[in-house]
Length: 234
Length: 181
Image 1 (cartoon, each protein chain N blue to C red):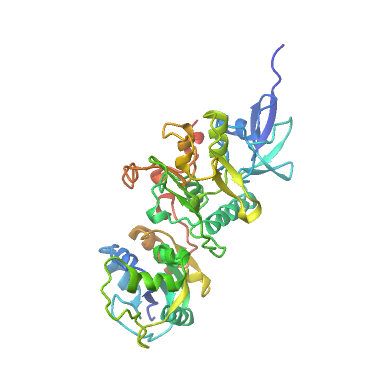
Image 2 (cartoon, chains in turn red, brown):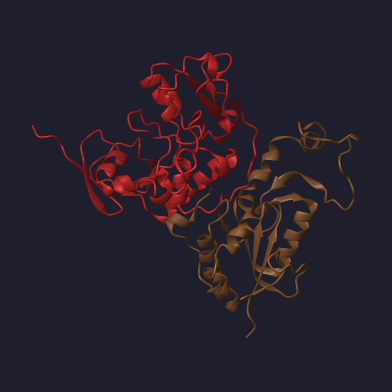
């Protein structure tokens, strides 16, 4: 029996996929980039950052979690959706302390890259300047919650890929934050610098020590090419 | 016809953005053909002489004097532009927002490892502008019309922005010109 083919349209373009695939998966394979932050290939998508929201038959859905169905009409690159995404990115910037000018991750940061791609010159919401923790106790790794966007990629990677469960969320609402799986500090965990979790952070919250600023400005990942152009090139 | 006027100011900034304005190099000759500079550290004019089309603001507000200057600019300029990370976000000076003003002054004038201050006095002459409780991005204080991000924004970003403003076109930047660092 031949596998069932499902056809949807994304911004009018016909895209084909198989049952069980998500909108984001079929968009990626068709060379259509949908912006995302909390999604990381290999992890279970959970749709928490809402940046990948698209209109599905007129209703907003996270494309990383929504399975495709025949005849779906998806809107991705519309002014309305772009504005929604800009608003989310704006809020992420003002709710944390994102000092791009001295951040080691600048130029390689996915939050910054999505903001660049959306053409954000400055967030429109008032800055909160919250006080957040920095944990530099681990010999090889920094944890800086000032830059954390609560994407949960470290939680998932540590648990599902490394099999360690070093990170977890604590508290709720505006108090929600990443915590390490120990009563004390990062150095008390079994986190190792070779763990996959170290590379899972989209921003500069989890950083390797002693390697910062190695790549000069102009040669970093998103200096010349927008995030998502690798998907668009196919 | 009279040329449109440009004014610039540095508030809580490092003058890096003004260096970047000068970094437009010989294009500054083209610029002065079509505009006159009013109040600005570039020509050292201290007070507004006429109404200005564009005001370029470098730096956020850290003192009451910064607020005063910024409000003056809003009053005298048709279009006000935040230039650079400090004006847009508070920038490096805003790092002091994470401690109290008292702690900040104590560290600067009393407890810092290199401080020599035998009288143990924190300067409080009335000639010195009072510090605000926090450092505020320019758009927290007055309405800002446009933002040129970057630390500093590249000369090309500033040039592209200025040309669009002077031609009365909407500001839009190619990918390489929006940078936050």
